[in-house]
Image 1 (cartoon, rainbow, N blue to C red):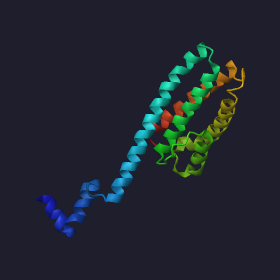
Image 2: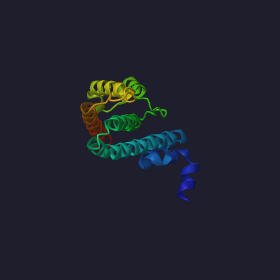
Image 3: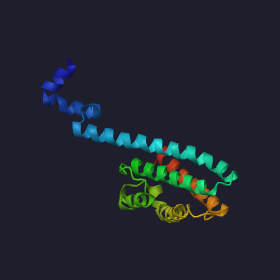
Image 4: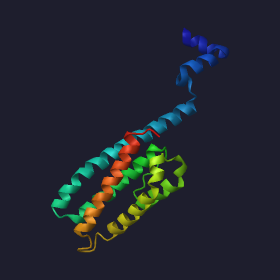
Length: 171
């Protein structure tokens, strides 16, 4: 009964919309809100995947599987960068190319949280260096222990950045 009154008389509806907020969102606003919620959930899922892979890096290092340490770090970067994009409301289009993701972050820097903006230069540099190492992974003995340790350090930093942005957001 109450809903019918609101539906019938638009003069009564306007003040109630202000009081009830999102209950009366337009269909377009509801769709936008749902899309943003889906991107946020995707950012959490990506971060969770990155955290799980991050835990495997010390085991790979002990096993002297240096190439896999670098490869896993690439995947960690992929999940974290994708999560940062999704958190900021930007669909990465399913790209797995780290260079494209960094370009998307650069292009949309105005939408990025302050913490991401402050770390963009480091993200750009480490991503570029990581991509160069990944491209060398098929060359025998191209990845050294030092390369693997450096890659682990990069993974530590990007996971921490993504955790601080996605999980502890207060910007």
